[in-house]
Amino acid sequence: MQKIIGISGGKGGTGKTFVATNLAIMLAENHRVLLADADVENPNVSILLNEKLEGNGQVVSSFIPKIIPENCIFCGTCANACRYHALFQMKMKSPVLIEPLCRSCELCMKVCTSSAIESEQHAIGEIFRYEKDSNLTVFVGRLFPGETKTPRLISKMLEQAREDTARSSNGYDFMIVDCAPGAHCDVEKALKDTDEVYCVTEPTPLGAHDLKRTLELARFLNKPAKIIINRADMVEYSTPIELISKEWGADIIARIPLSREVMETYARGESLYYIHKAKADHLDHPVLKEFSKIIEMMES
Amino acid sequence: MNQSEKMVKIAIVSGKGGVGKTSFCGAIASILAEQKNALIAVDCDVDAPNLALLFSMKEQQTEDIIVRATEKARLLPDQCTGCKACIDEKYCTFGALSWDISSQRPLIDPFSCEGCGACSVLCRNEAFMIDQVESGHIFYSRTTEGFPLVFGETIIGASTSGKLVRDVKEFAVTNAHDSRFMIIDGPPGIGCPVIATISDVDYVVVMMEPFPTAFHDASRLIEVINRFNLPFGIVINRCDAWSEGRKNILDFIKANDYTHLGDIPIDLSIPRSIVNMQSIIAYSPDCVASRSIRTIYQNLMEEIDLLR
Figure: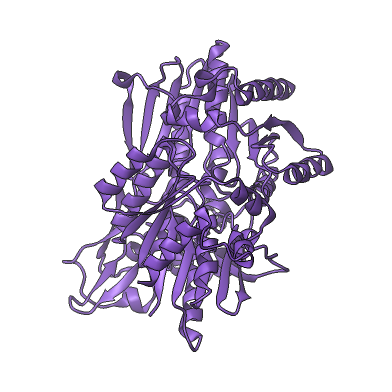
């Protein structure tokens, strides 16, 4: 039985990737886990796992039209059909592509009756896959700077991750999807096939405002949601988050305290869990105890 | 030359989220207002607009404009003959069309639909319509500190952040009147909404933090900024969080001959000011963070004078 959990939350910098990587590492002690980094504009999972993405990943491309001027009869059908105004055509000239406006719908090619448009593949990003250890497989999508087709890259990466889960003989118990901040199409795509959404927030009006938008997105996508408050004791602002929790029927499943040690290990790319497991005091650690609580809940 | 052409547009971005864009942006707006500079503040983080939460609004003046920037396909069931060509010939490259066996008609997934119109153009029975749907709001108000503030907010599920960012900026330019500065709080990331935010500004402030994640994201963002050939300066927030990380950023700035506008140390007055829903300058004018931001403000103004 596989369960897919999306880690979202709205505001940036609330600790989504920190939560996603810690959950993945700790779950991997007893389960097969796939961790997918779906924040393709800023993929940080590997930094927190202290893994370098060596060389090139598998390149993901998307369609752009290649105009064949000698076949063009200047009919203007393609430029008229494009609702994104990505094709610009002057009288008796073949159309010119304004690439940033193209969204790869292929309609121009499909409506052209004179074979003047061919498909060209334009690279938008890359996908990496590696095994962190025998129980933890990681998928990462990374957008090439300057590209904008993030939803396509996210969908492609998650498609491959799911194929991987279907292929592997013993299967995965959990798939964790780390999302981008915000509540836009990227996050929609990342959460599309999840079973549940964990919203990581911070106890401030900004965290609360963006949390509500994520809960709204989760409801819109018909996904049950839960709340994790990070740096819970940074400032006193728990009541508004508790009210949101009640109003939206999303339980607060953990309150992770502010910790200088977390900041330092985060900076060095070290795992808080491994450090304390080596010292055998991980069961008493105030931060790790909160993660254990989440994991117990996930296992039940 | 009209007034808006003389206005200097400054965008604050970071790549990674939670690095302090909104706090810094609010502080710079407060300082400009305090020094009697005419300004307009704009929040282009349309997925999580937070700048307005730092300022009290004169509520009776709030305007709410609904933007219909998204288009989505709709099936006209009476026109559809159930020929299934839309599925068999793969009209939709976004995976928004699927076949409903029970009704023998296509189903449209509104999340996946990008409104390209391929189905409506290609269907021989004209069974698809493209509708404009509400995609977001633009809010316009005046803060109690005296300056106007514009922000956009997407409607959940409408999925057109980049387009709304452009609409918000256009609205702000139209309503800037005699403002000399436009201060823009940008979205996180390096993709479509960020590109829409920075595409026509005069100066970009890149917020960094001495953590590898923030450094990594900001350096990817700088690649994008450099493609647009925009002048930019770097601010290191929480500069004392990790000395080795700060040194890495300073080495990076030096090696590339970039501009370092200054540093902001960790100061719990900042989260407290946020909880109090005030800019740090208004909440605690003499705290460490406020003093460092004033120095950065001076450096920023010198940089901008060089552009004129």
